[in-house]
Length: 149
Image 1 (cartoon, one colour):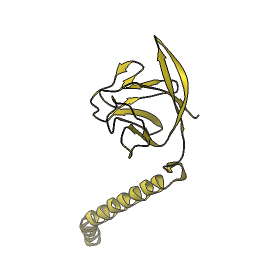
Image 2 (cartoon, helix red, strand yellow):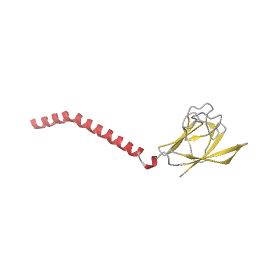
Image 3 (cartoon, one colour):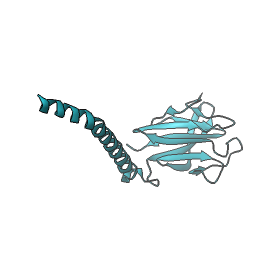
Image 4 (cartoon, helix red, strand yellow):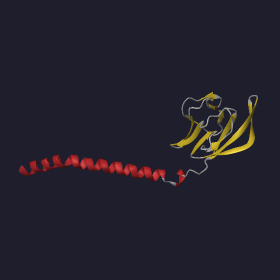
């Protein structure tokens, strides 16, 4: 009977330590997985995932122009030179909007621009999901999204 009591006592003594080591191990494994995800080849910042075709709006119709811009993993749009796409338009903010891929879903987000961003003629107030064929409007600029499959 004494041996069983000692065994239970030892288990009670070392169980918190074992749980702590297990928790630290899980954290380390999660961090390692995240690093593998970040460093994967699909996360290269210069990889092109599609294109934005600039459109010319005539009445209620859009006609493509010859201006085509690449879509990167994170594409920022604005007048400033530090954007992925620097577009000169008096109604665009310096850092107007961004497109980005998160969990295999493409998103469009207005970056607090003065004149707003429209997706399919609806003003967006927060990040929204975008799909192939959607039209983004900012200032006098209209862009059709063409995502690679």
